[in-house]
Amino acid sequence: MANYSTNEFKGGLKVMLDGDPCSIVENEYVKPGKGQAFNRVKLRNLMTGRVWERTFKSGESLEGADVLDQDMEYLYTDGEMWHFMKTDGSFEQYAVDKKALGDAEKWLKEQVVYNVILWNDNAISVTPPNFIELEVVETDPGLKGDTAQGGSKPATLSSGAVVRVPLFINQGEVLRIDTRSGEYVSRA
Amino acid sequence: MTSDWRPVASIETLRARAKLVAQVRHFFAERDVLEVETPVLGHGGSTDVHLASLSCHAMTPAGRERLWLQTSPEFAMKRLLAAGSGPIFQIARSFRDGEVGRRHNVEFSMLEWYRPGWSLDELIDETQGLIRALLPINPGPTRQRRYRDLFIEQLRLDPFTTSLAMLRNAAEERSGMEMKAAERDECLDLLMSLVIEPTLGCGGIDIVVDYPASQAALAKRHQDPRDGSWVASRFEIYLKGIELANGYDELTDASEQHRRFDEDNAARCTAGLPQVDVDHRLLDALQAGMPEGSGVALGLDRLIQLALGKDSLEQVLAFPTPRC
Image (tube, rainbow over all chains, first blue to last red; front, side):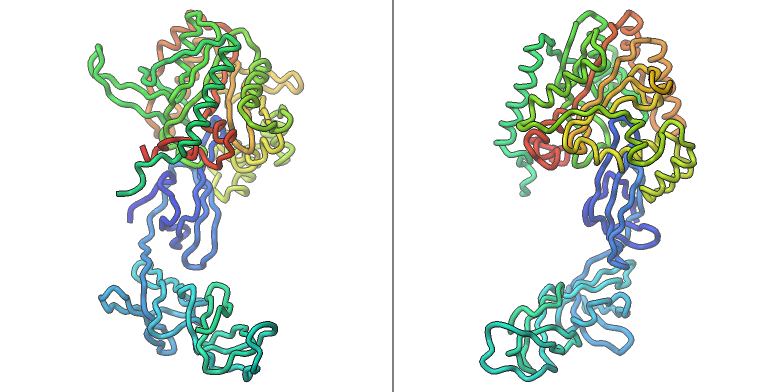
């Protein structure tokens, strides 16, 4: 991979830092009136999702990271790995381990398209779509007539996630959920 | 087709900018300071280790020559002073390679002026007066802060006497950078940029004075009467964490100037940086005699940015470097 100097750091550039692939979030060039210039850089560690803040001497460089964002459809799990397939027509499949899957595990549904980050052709993280439609597999029976306000109850969805839903929701219904907050949006 | 052909600053902003520039000219006209124009290209460039100069080759009456894009109009203006110009100012396009960011653009407008016979304090007063004249609202009181006091207050470190090991530790702690081989000034620059600068000019105009003697650049040095330490006769003005101006009690000693140029080029050699041609005509002008006095360089784009309440420099530039 090419090396990138601090002058070239901009949002979204993927670089290697301390052995992990990172995405540049922000880069600020600072220089006292007379004297040495530095860059204050915020980077998201793509392995952990954590944001690091680092200072570099201006002109220092980091090695680029071979990182690709790919749309992939979820296929199935064999209990140990989760299998996804590229949606670009190549039918190429990738096996994702539990660590890389992370929180996305509770939002998995077959045939839905996820964003998978590949580093050196290995999946390192999976992001679900912002909204997903899932069926309620278990919840207390719905309260008739209560369609407007007040109260919520837990409901287990087909993906395994448990979310708070309004009292009128019944088992078997399909709901629209915001995967970023884990909140109920509406009936689908 | 992309929209990159369009200016970043709105036409309305450019009108407001033109008004501010007219105000600057009016400010100096009222004070009988002569507006001058000096070349953007020079046979010599700035040797400052921390400035990267751009250069080009041009066919001149002397054949094909290397010419340097000026990082500020300082050298040519000093030659005018030595030739008896009296007080002068210039709004000069200046160039610094690699300086890119929210407060930096590779080419920018420097407002620079010189006051023969004036003390640093007189020039500080005029500079903050100009800044106040351009700002739409009163930024608060003006405070003068000693470099040394700022470090002691905010970092509990005396920048002049603390051991290099302690400075390296503090710099490492604040930046997460490896500073084991760093020199004293590098540690100080880092702490100044990361810790002190962001706090300056909040609630008023801050004037920082008495920089370490090692950071004198083209300023004289003097001994602080309070504690006897050698300091640079230099000031910087900050507003809202942004460095606006840098002023000197100008060095007029030709041999001392020559020595500093050579030291810079030696330091460049050690650091693996390119050598910069020394401006021999400036040295000759100093030798012929430049009047004692003070001068200041002010980042005009930054002042306009603050006066118009914008968050970044590019918002007051028609075409910042990425769109040039």
